[in-house]
Length: 97
Figure (cartoon, helix red, strand yellow):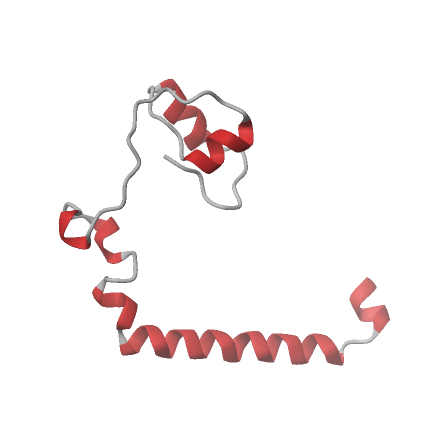
């Protein structure tokens, strides 16, 4: 179990510990916690992953190579560029207020 990359010490972490579920090695080591040796970490092939919403994540998922995904990535890059251009046009007074 692992919290999101930016959540910090979140409720999912406390719930996992209370349930006796081991934490991801990076979170466990960062917080200096002892491993309960409850989980054996391993990589699996996509065919070994049980059906569920988590199947859509990863490099082998059908969505990873979708033309829609490529279009979304290009649009997101366009929006970032637009945001940066608008920010550069602001004066120092506009930024500070």
